Image: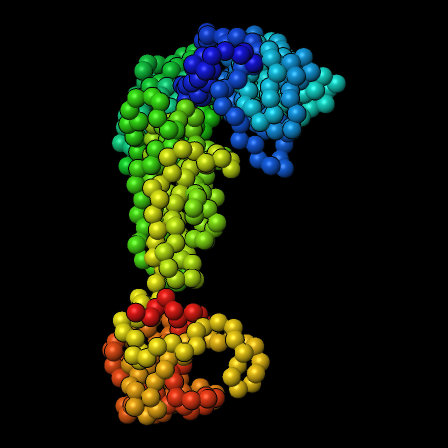
Length: 535
C-alpha cells in the first residue's frame, strides 16, 4: 500500500475502477497487456465492513481473461476491506493463492507495501503467468497471516482455459471457442453494442462463407437482446484456422441485465462451443458534469403529500451514480435522518440492477404510513454498507391524516371536560383508559353533528355508551358519538351523512354521571386520541 497525496490515491482508485469497467473488452484476449506494478495501495477511502462477517471482506476484482495461451501473461487486481479489528502489518499479512492451482501461475504470494489500518480498503494489482500445460484452471485468492492462516473471505473462483492457438489435436467439439471482446459491462439504453468473438475450426470440413455456416445467438431459442441474431463469417475458414467475427446491434429500450453469448451454426443448428455468457447492464445515462461532486446525486422523487394511517403506497426515488465504482450489492437505499427510524416500513432496499458510474438508479418500492397522525419526516439516501453517502433526498414530510382527512366541524360547540387518556373512572373508581373525549352539552338540547361525511355503520343502544351512533369515513376510520338523549329519526346503518349533519342530541344515557357527549375516533376498530382531528 503506497502512502501518497490524496490526488495520487484517487488516481490509483480511478485506474482500478476503469479496469473493472473495461474487463469485458479484455475477456479472453491473448494479446499483450500492460502489466500493473506489484504490491497493494490504498484506495483513498475507508471500506464498508459488514459487522459480524469475514475479517477480510472481498470487494471486487479485475479477473484474468477466460482464455490464455500457455505461458501468457495478464494483469489481475483484487480489492479487500480490512474488517479484522486490527492493523494488517506489512510483512505479516499478504495475499496468497487459495485455489488448488496455487503454484502454477508464476506467483503464490503478493506482499503489502505498507500497513493497512482496520476498516481501510486496499487494492493489490499483480501479474500472473499461465501454466504451460493446456487445460481448465480455477483461480482464487485470499488474505493470509505470516503463519499460513488464511483470512475469510477468499475471492470467487474464476475459471481460465489455457490452450494453444490452432490446437485441434485434442478431442473436442467441431467449433471451439477461443476468446471474445464483449461489449462493456454498462451500456445506455438504445445505444450501439459492439463485440467480437473468435472460434477455431476443428471440424472435418471448411466453414464456407454464406448461408450454411454463420455465427448465431447461443441464447435459448436463438433470441438476442441487441436486435441481431446472426452474423456472417468474414471469409471461408479452413480446418485448424481461427475466425474472428464482428457482432453489432443496439441495446434494449428498457433498463435491465441482458445475457450475450454466441455459437457457430451449420444450417441453422449450433455446433460446438458457445462463448461464455456475458451480461450487459442497460440503464439510463446521467451527465455528472465536472469531477468533485458527491458520489450520489439526488435527481427526483415521487411520493404523496398526505396518506391515511397505515396506508400502503408505491413511491419512487432516483439518484445518479457519479462516483468511481459500480453500485453493486454493497450499496442500498436506506431511510435517512430524521426519518431513519423505520417509520415508513421500508429500508435497506436493493437497487434493481447494478448501477455503473455515470448511470441513473431509479428505485420503486412500497411504504406504509405510520399509524400516528401528523407530519412525519421522509428522507432517503444511498448507503455503502451502513455508511450513508452525501446528497440524500431533500428533507420533507408526509402528513398522515385521519381517514380521508381531519374533522370538518366540531361535533358539539361545548368545551372539553375530560380528555383522552388514563384517568380514574368516575363511576367504578378504577384507573383505566378513557378512550375518547368528553364535551360539555345541555341535556336534550345540544345537537350532535357528524364531524365529516361518512356512512352510518351502527345506531342504537350500546350498553355503557347508551344511545350511540358510529360513522365510517373510509380508510378504516370511524367516529363514535355516545350517551345521546336520542338519535335523530332516519339515522341508521347504511345511511350516508354529510359533514356537520345533525345525527343526535346530547344526553346522559348509559354509564354517565351527567349530560355530555363522549366522542371517539377509531382506527381499524381501535380507539385513538381524537385531539388532532378536532377543529
